[in-house]
Image 1: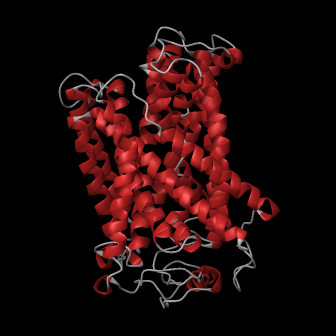
Image 2: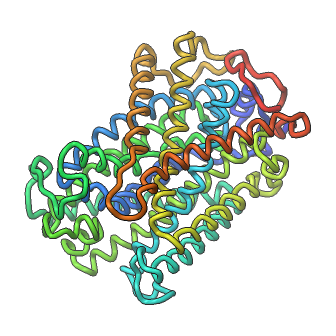
Length: 520
């Protein structure tokens, strides 16, 4: 067993990890701020609300605001359950580790597989957002051609270039070690939080109408789905695309001090801060928008409101802060994905497991997973060059994959809870374990019901009149492909020649609270 002091881990945390079946290999340098930053910067409301405001307004008009609190409350129920299971099993890999402990065999492994695919695509989706911001700040960022629009050939090509450059940078930061990653992430999150507060305040000061705007059925040009319930259900895709990824704090559990206490708080702080901040930002934007009916809110989105209300100079200052948020968001997603890949490889649950499970002796960080995730994300960017609509559909599929991974965990928890989980904590680990107590069953049922409803809504085929009709089914087909490919990989990894002991595992068995089917 590695010396816990040499890896920067308090002996109690290392011993706690040993009870869960793993050696302390990663360096424990992170505190509560860095854990919160990992979850908050993954969600990154400055990045995602700026990207997706147009979707909400195009389908729901001003009343799309009300889809935000509905989605927030549903995702909060999910986050509460993930916080509880994360406190019981503070191991790197979050959804994978939680899923395989509450659901044996393929379903538990599938949770990690789907989350990993979703994270890789999300890295590319976050990085490509630079194209929507940087050319508006300074024309020199349009390095290829003259049209910065993402839907143009020049814009799509430049987006690939900017996004790939950002991913190379975030990969280098991840390779430098968790302390470097946390330092950049902490600074970025503080800048984003400050920017959100200042931006909300500035937009409220420049409001041209009152908050009752969210009660009025005001639209720009009507969408193909109309202005009724169908439009609002489609508008709910916007907050659904924003409010996920809060679990990423759990991926850094083995690098966080006192993770049983800090990880649950980080998950809940991330979802609450994002939910409240996002709601206020949307409200302030609707109140400050120069016009609600000229169509620009459903085409130019939030950037149009900021520049119009605050002026080009002040507006561009805020856009710089948004660009910084995009960079930190990309870094956080890649970090979570690399820890997830490391955790699965350590259990022999991925191809090339020995290489992916190797930890750098210098930085105490898994380097290969960061490189692989970065390379795959760069490959995904190329899709945008040929067909922007296809990239959008792949991104939608990624959001569906991540929320399905959450559902696999919460559904597994519910089945275990009905059989008495969590019961008494394992010996020596009772202190600091987060528990939902008597509310656990009700919140678990709510999380599962919400997860099913959200996934059905995201997957529901909606043809807007553009492109081939079959593209409406692309997210469903993408998820089906990921599930089938995952089944094939899972079966292949069961072959005796593919089985291997986990690099950090102490023993094949685990504590009595985690009797599971492990790939060893």
